[in-house]
Picture (cartoon, helix red, strand yellow):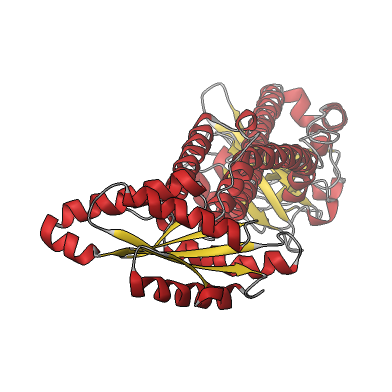
Length: 508
């Protein structure tokens, strides 16, 4: 896999991972914020209900104390019935003597008069001079009721009996305090007595039953925790906040279904997902374009370097405008390297074909030139050609007596004469003191004339050495260059017999 592809995949994965983390984090923050808002609203709602309950209890207590102080209200059946009807917060009234015997009852059947309630909690507490607010209990008429009781105090300070207000929890005005109240989306309130019995709930069927989470609420009040998540009997979860009244120890529970928060979250979460999705796609596009601006030139540079391995020196053109500064520097360095390599290659190629001593072409170049003669002749590029092989006479003796440096100079001199006569492209050093000339377009007579010129010019150096030259021509002697070379060698052998001589193959 290419580096550019790896970079794209890594960045894509990082962007997607970041998007997932952002979505999860946003969802978590939205949920946490929603829970806190609901908890705050529910807690405030619970506290408000407790304040209303306190107002109700205080109002009921004051009304009962007034009845306890006015003897005519306590003793007159009709007036007591009227008082029980007019008081909005209670359903019935009973008046007892100090023995617990009911002596009068408002909004009750006369049959209750004479019954004894000394065993009741509210009577016992009120006889001690206190205001008593009970939990739910079974009344004399088999209703589930709550009682608020105050003592009847004589002028001498003694307690002559009790006045109790009775609240029927299933069919009283008590529920009107909490009806039609909104506590968020599908939120509701429940009022529990100190034993956990439900005094009010929107679901009338469960009023009078014990709340399933009462123990948790009690523990929360003990620990100072006022916010809960609990499940009802059907497994439905609720966020609940509680508050407790100071006199009654009743508990107000405001609860909101967890599913409502989830419904509230959905539009926000979907909005965040869509927004982040669009941002992620845009970021991916921008990143892909940006990466492409870097990796595309890098890919071209990589391909260019790969071509160097196979000897192709390709410069990078029209790339600078679309790249960053670092890539531009890399491209410039690459192009400079290619230029240096081309120069070095040209130099090495030239050195590989040039004789290091004499400066004319070497035997490798001569062999290449001879090999191409046959093809050139066959294709009609040339109609005639000649090969001259030249050998120095007495060169070993000259080298031994004059020294190698002087011998080298003599070889250079012969190379210079050859170059002057036939040009640099036709002169070759065959090896040691042997030289060669390849003449395209020259027949045997022309080649012999050129050979004589070389021999004479070299002889004029008066070095004590001379040249022997053998010549073979195409097509006179052969149309095959390799055969022609053999013939030229034989002609040279003939010239070496007498030395300082030019010999055509036909004269061998």
